[in-house]
Each structure stands twice: as structure tokens, then as C-alpha cells.
Length: 529
Image 1 (cartoon, rainbow, N blue to C red):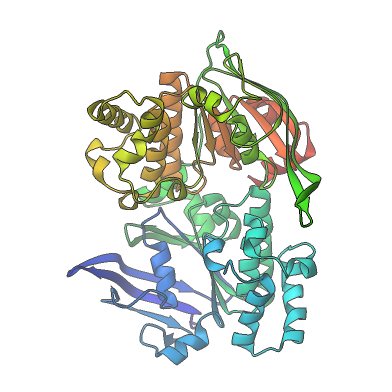
Image 2: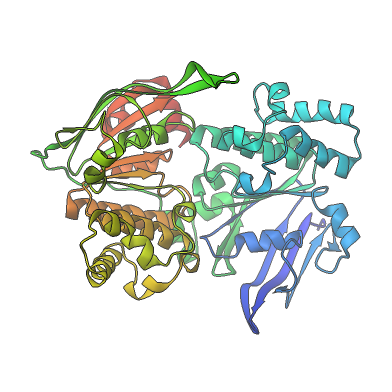
């Protein structure tokens, strides 16, 4: 038998805190052959990323220790290797792409500086030679106008572009093994498809091994040769990709496979009144130049968008990043300026001042994509959820507020006993429930949901969808659901609007759009999902 490229043998990983040792990964054994793709799947907290970071010894030791096992690369131990050996392997022979590119890219440096640093450090290249290689690599990963974009900073790129730059950075060293930690989680289906095609192509070209960590099973189906399933720090099942999907043995694997979004939207009452209407909604941001910052032009983001939404109904906004979905959601809440008419429950919103908007704010709430950035880490759950009550119902006593918080937490399936804990003590799914409870506590009629399930595991996603449906049925809530996950949209939405570069490509009843799309772009999105 030939020697594997990477051999993780009976590995256990433990964290030591305040004199207590907690084992987070137990007896993990994985092998990756040259040119093979192994997908590592499981929910958040199952130990996938910790195992990946341990390969390159990127976890601080202490508090991390490895009670048993070894990690061998080409038969050479990495767990017991000295620092110079590790430096020769890290980023050079083994490269890693992280989930969140904004954390990995330096916001103060241009793309050129960051990419050149990689080539200078690992391959000792001079600037002129490196520039040609960088441009070639950026072109390969699909960055348009690469020579112009070299002077850009990370914040000037979209999420998909940042992820492509990260992939370019990892591939510049031509690694033998690439570890990709959820690199497509927050990307659109079309960008996702491009990145997967790129990884497949590069893998063949470089004969590279690939460890792909994800909780998206449709990606695993497309990309992996073999699959390993992790639960609570243990590998519960390992098999060839086709065999695992057709005949999963472990109950947990079967549960993962069954948690793909399905079902129908909540039935809509035939006499449901109109709650929200938008007519010719257009959004443009001014372009300012010169010393006096005069407006020289406008950047049109959304063009002439119209729809009607009834009480208890869900409208899905679908499209790629940069198509204007989130911008539309913010404009409907009057958080950014827009042209056209917005009528909420018979009241015109355009032309109202912030003070005049305040009585309506209670009835229109929002839940953002990333609960980490929308929840204040310095406030406990009670303080976070009651914030809306303090603003909109200032006459309530502290005891009444607390009672309303307890009720909201029970509704979203959170233990009220945990209301004095801070967001850091909760999982991603629980944090999203806190954000929903915060929106719910003021008893709104409309909630704008901006990709509330995109960064969650499939099983947690299914729970949040079931929760949103139950709340909609109980309170007759209307939702504007922004997403790029078409399966989720189909399970939740009554009508759907497909956006592309600010233009409405297709609009209509959800079932009709999914079964008989009229536009090529919609058919393309459906084919990729």
C-alpha cells in the first residue's frame, strides 16, 4: 500500500482551562491520498475546524494538548516537529483557506502587498516576477480586471471576490495539500459553483490533496471522493461519497441527510389584508469627487422595484451578492434613502422624519445574517432582548419587561433561565434565536430576515425554519426573506422576486417560479442550487 499524503492516526485534542481538561476531539483517524478530496462534515462544535488547525499546529499550546495519536505528512510527524520544519510546511506544502476572509486578509494592506508577501516569503521571488504570477493567479480564480484590482483594499471587494483572493493566496505556493475550512459558506450559489469548479480544476492540475470542511451536503456530493462525518468530536462514519449518500449507516449521518430544507409555506388566509406595498422603488448612492465632495453621478443599486405583501405572507428576495437584496430590505425599513412609494398598513413612509418613523419602527423589525455582529457582546440576553421595549414602551416596569423577555425566549425555544448569560456562551443557532426573540418582543407585523440561516448548520437551519413558520402562523407575521439558498426560499416563501444587478429579472408566485421559470437567469440559479 502506498503511503498516504496525510495520515491522522488516533488523534485526541484537549483544552486545559482553569485546571480542567476538556477533550474536544477523540481518537480521530483520517487518511488523504495524493490527489484525493476528503470532505469533513458535521455540525458546528463537532471538532472539524479544531482538527484542521491541528494539522498545521496553529492552535496555541498550552492550553491545547494532544493526549494521544499523531499527524503525519508524507510519513513525517507534524505533532512532534520543531518550529523550522513547521515553517517549511505551513503555507508552503500545506496551505489553508479560512471561512471568513475578512479575518485572514489585512485591512490596511493592498491586495498586491499581501499576495507579494506570500511569494517573497515562501518562494523568494522578486517583485517583477511575482507580479506576473499574481496577475495570472488572480485571473485563474476569476478576479476581473486583475491589474486594476491590485491596488484595492479588502473592504473594496465583495464577499465572493475576497474568498477568491484567499484561494489565490493559498495556491500561489502550489501546495501538495489544501485545507479549505468552509470556504463557500456565505457565497451565492453561482459564485459557489465557480469556486468549486476552480478547486476541481486546480486539484487536477497540481495533483493536490484536498481536505474540504463544510456542512453543505450538496457541495460534498459534487466535490468529494470520500466523506468523514463528525459528531461531538468523534468520527462516526467514513465512506466513499456515493456509498455514504446512497446507504448511510450511522443514525446521525441519516439525520444530516434528512435535514435538507423541505415542506410548504404556511397557508395564507384568502382574506388577508395588504400590509406593505412598494411602487417603483429605486435606490442610488451619490458618487462624490473633488475637494468640495460634489455629487458628480449616482451609482444605481436598485431599479423600479414593485410588489405587494399581505399579512401572514412571505416574499423571498433572491439573487447574487451585489444584486441589491439587502439594500432593498434596508430601504423598506427606511434605514437608507430611496425613491418611489412605500406604503405600510395604509401609511406612506416616504418623506417621514426619524421622529415620525418611530411609532412605526415597533411594527417593522429586522433579523440580520450574522448574529455575532448584531448582538452586543457586553450585554446579557435579558438586556439585548428588552432593548426594543425600552425604546418603544418606556412606561413598562423592569418586572414587566423581564416577563415579556421570558415569554419571547420561550416562544423561540430558549431556556429563560439563561437570560443572564452573554452571547458568547451560546451556539450560532441559539444566537440567531436571541436575534429573533429581540425582534419578536415588541410584537411586530413585519420582519425583514436578511439571510438568517445562511451561516447555520443544516439541522439548526431546519429548526430555525420550523420556528419561523410556527411564529408566522401564530402571530400572522409578514416576512421579507432575503436569501441565496433557493431550497430554503421554496420551503418558506409564498412569492419570490429574483434580482440581478438591481433589476427584477423574474417575479411571481413561488411554486410557479420554481417549477416553470421564464428567465434564463432564474433557470441557471435553480440548476446550481
